[in-house]
Amino acid sequence: MNSVDIGQSLRELREAGGKQAKVVARGAAMSPSKLSKLENGVLAPSIIDVERILTVLEVSGEAKVRLMEVARQVATEATAWRIYRRSGLHKHQEEIRAIEASTTLLRLFQPSCIPGLLQTPEYVRGILKDWDLTEDALEKMVGARLKRHDVLHQEGRSFRFLITESVLRWEIIGARSMAMQLDKIISMSRFPNIAIGVIPQRGGKPGLPTSAFVLFDARLATVEVPHAEITTTELPDIDLYLRKFQKFERVAVTGDDMRDLVAGIRGDFLRQQETD
Image 1 (cartoon, rainbow, N blue to C red):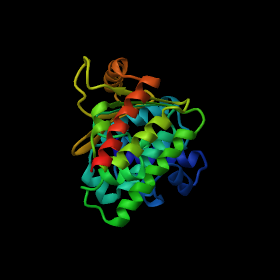
Image 2: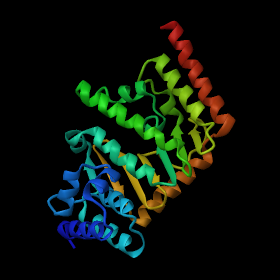
Image 3: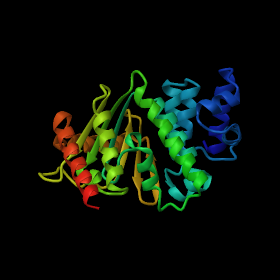
Image 4: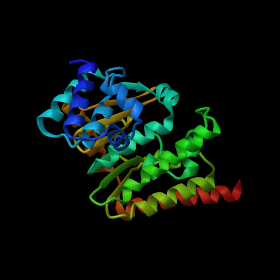
């Protein structure tokens, strides 16, 4: 089966379910024209594309497993950031939002920056300042990322974030703005469905942090490297990242200890602001 066959299968499933293309496209966070290109084999679907469409179509069981496996074989699993920039970074945020909305348990490990679901608008702008975006593209990206935060308040969703202490100290924006960002982390950690762990700089570690990654339940993993985002549905790969997450989780500080650590770093930023 190739991309044409996958597209035809997706179209047949949609038509069998009696769903209009525009309805499926909207639910899968893509344009009707993109869905049309996927169904007609003009555009090769990514793993995330197939996952979103099948979720909207409420396809499960053997049919879903089969199509996801074919999509994995056909799709290019590493997508360069320059491609996302070309098509619009905000559109990729909408794709991620669709995956998050269908996830019951999200696990995220981040050794590079504050997780997107916990970022303030100032922090989003700060990490994008070197991306050479137009003001319009930047504002669309900020808006799309903040829209993703809605999933944090949806019933039946759980989130476990692991962040290295160095991320909290990395002054990507001004001291006052960093203090506000850390305030948000402390506040969000009190939500009953959100667990935030910070891996302290001092003390033994179970391994190297390497790259940021996200686990969507136990069905999908995305890994961020400097030039691309890698997507995998391979169970051995997912298990590898799950074990890595669990190892780091064991050395992370959580609860009140985590909040005390973050508050201390926040205090350092506020004192720095007074002397700047």
